[in-house]
Length: 212
Image (cartoon, rainbow, N blue to C red; front, top):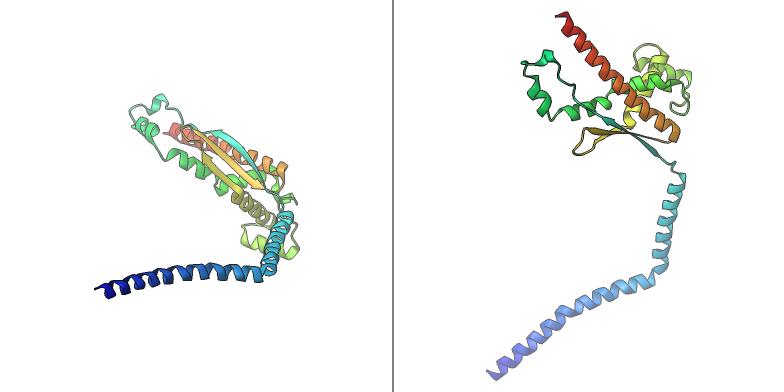
């Protein structure tokens, strides 16, 4: 029994040493590789840092302009009493998201583009050759001017974003671009186009109601 016990102790000692040794060798091998190839590692890090710096310098800055809109439901009129509209107006959770989608709609973007005459602004729509204008005219409805206007509307729509202010009726309407003044003008134009469109829609609804 004494011999068996001695062999077990020796085996446990050998197993412990065998389990610890690979870890030490593993770290030592990594360190040896790093010391041997430190120049390659340094060059790789330098290349990455240089590429990042070049990209930062060459990438044009982008600017964001934000307009805050107070979006409220249309107030009830005496004609709406008894129509069931009171419950809809007071508890409609989809009202604000719907208005935000309208702010980002193509119709509002096109109105803003027309308001600022962005189709003729070389800082917004690059000058196109005759062949390119013909392609734009074929894609858009109407003549070449209509195609460029549709392109300007697409660019406006692509840069517009909206975000609700939690707990309020406020919506932040933002536009991102490369020209700070133009970015601010477009953000304001989109907000004004949305307000105009909303007023026109309410007026049309009221006009149809008076006919009946």
